[in-house]
Amino acid sequence: MKNLLFIALLITCLSSISAVSLNVTNHSFEDIVFGVDGFTCSGEFPCSGTITNDPIPGWIGDGFVGSFRPAGFRYDVTGLPDGVNVAFAHTGVTTISQVLSDNLLANTDYTLQVGIGNRNDSTGFVGYQIQLLAGGVLLAQDNNSLSPTPGSFVTSTVNFSTSSSDPNLGQALEIRLVSLGIQSNFDNVLLDAETTETAVPEPQSMFLLGLSLIFGLRVVKNS
Ligand SMILES: [Ca+2]
Image: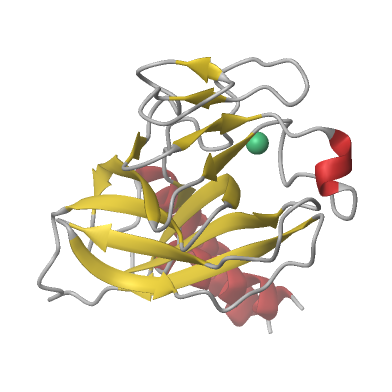
């Protein structure tokens, strides 16, 4: 038992894997406070909502897009993934995008997750794409693989892993949410990064390693 503990401590000190959640501004589209069924739009299109030059703070839209607080009956199957707001895209093929402050790193596993919604009062699910880019280059995408039932959200997951020689290393990461028609809803955009390389032990780890070695040697000597 003591030998197993020693080995576990040794492995923990020598090879650590760390996962972090990268910052996505306004990731849940809650920055604007609405009454029920309130929404924003840029004013480029006929709009009965709140007209603003920044309909989805932190994000750039290329068409009729905005933040939206859907009434309860619009998503009565699963509710919303997070909070009370979503983002909507309401033109033919429309993209909502954000360039992140993080760059593409070597030896890292990236996991992008986004809620995709199909309103109860829609005339049919129009489809979507969830894309992860670096330096404007598409790395990976979910090209409309899921089809949420009316009144529900599903979670799209996009994975991408780098080696030590990916040609796009150091380029700024970007997330694009694409609606393929009128309209798709998005929510709760999460991007995690997990390094896969063996870490250089930090001072605290070196201290634990020293204790482990002393403890282990005593166990071996006394066995
Ligand atoms: Ca939300």
